[in-house]
Length: 211
Image: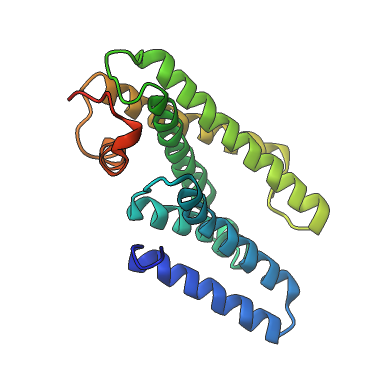
């Protein structure tokens, strides 16, 4: 399960595990909690994929591990959000794009890969809504962490939250737009390559696919 993953993903997981042990030895419980939460969230796609018997591209797993590590561990522990003004924008933008692609793939699976039966615009809209929902859920998560554990994930409060939601909308449009272009046969390589790789690795979900 882990042997098939990229060196980047394994390096991130080992680093987080080491951070947990070091934090416990130093009795820095807040650091241990953040590192443990980051490790669990970054490993979640691996176990979910195995439970659902879905073959997720290792590159996507590595991207998830990097994103979660960059968001929680680097962002909160090493204060990257304050050090680099663009860090928050980059994290929310890339995650929204990824969720847009995930939303597209999930709905496309319902059509078993039939490009002619799947309506491009409605399908892209559903992918966009999925990405927006996930972005909103993350903002609720940030609020909960701040309220329950005294963190400062929301930074400037309402302004930070609204800025994040706007960036999420832009990223969601890019991800959903990639799915739209894929169905229209206009997308080649780039982000659409992630869709192609997932389809190739999971042919049983796309039995009606005709290229």
